[in-house]
Length: 505
Ligand code: UDP
Image 1 (cartoon, helix red, strand yellow):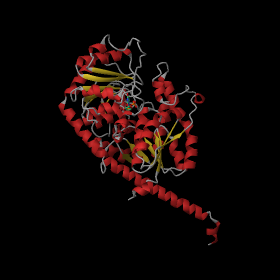
Image 2: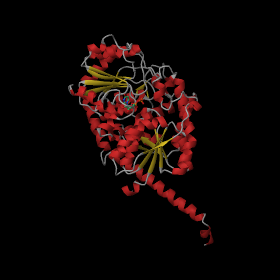
Image 3: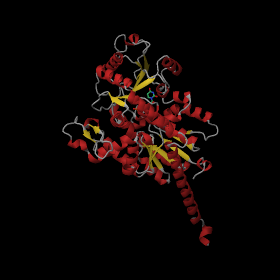
Image 4: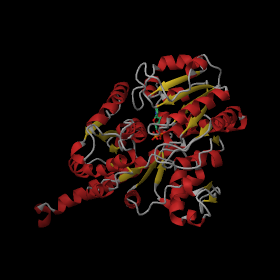
């Protein structure tokens, strides 16, 4: 057993991909590792460092007995890399209405290689004991290996989608489907999970992205292992499957969001909220328990005005109270084409629209919230689980359709709104009737709610001292410590054999 005194000597580098959905859980991880006595350093670019500074300062201030979390700033000359000035985060791409998102997204992703040399220099000079680097940095494994630094991969998603993706890639069952909308069972994956070709992302093997993903998997195979923001009791069959059939070495250390216990920590996740947090909670205080549905599509998805109007109409038809986050930032006094005429007046007191960024975990934790309409981004989904909420699932792209299947077919805590087809940025069109039906069903389903509340208890237990995620983290720390000890031993031997005095004996 490694003692906490020894562990405090461990130094972890955390290197997140620059998107809120990756940066938020990475900060949570850095904090979690720091509470275990390690030193955490986050590697990021100047503009992203601004997003980390405030919460890190609060954390360091509140925990004077721990090693301070630090930020290591990396250079990222956007214009030199062919990106627009200030494009240091995918948020820049998704919040600029005039940009062609698909092309820029890919260019942004491919620009990450620019960090390789800087990472090399840093590892050579600082020699941390472990590098936790995002999956989008496949070259990080090779760089870390050069300096005997164990590299862990962080995907940001859960076991279920990692396993589904593995089985789909391996067996390509969609090739045998009669049509792109014909359901089939994913071979090998526990649970007889049904999906259609239109919802599968593994098909583009020959595209630039497909090749990039191939490189990613190779680097993962050569890495020290995978860190997963999940907990064992949420998806035991998939956690086991992943460790036996996919990556062998993986540690489930989540839900990471539960590490945020103070009001301020919950309020300061990601961007500055577009609403006063206290006002928002005061509004919720006036509502009955489990009576309000929270609607958010994460940090990147956006919809056409027609779709937003349909959501508004469906919410009104359902008769339920709601908090709806819309990423549009209409300038003051401007007519908002995406809202039905007089909508806010009609739903006054019953509905709250947040234009921009919501303090999501604060809202989800409020007792008035009784359901979550989500795009099934893994962070949101897990935050919903940790808050004990049944969900309406509305996946848009990436691995969100797989996450939806976990909620609707395995956990059975959600109802699909009925999106059939994946699209890169703007989702499938869903009518107001479908929104109304799914919201009503989720808000009324007592069995679903009961299961969701049980899962939330399990999530809390997992991160408690001695809980499954807590123990996994201890085990990981032990392994890293052993690598460190071995590295130190090897170094001593190298020093001895190159010392001429030893050669004399
Ligand atoms: N988030 C938030 N406020 C918002 C939108 C998103 O706090 O208005 C947070 C949310 O709590 C989650 C993250 O941003 O932690 C989004 O990650 P997710 O994986 O759900 O979706 P993505 O944005 O990556 O599609």
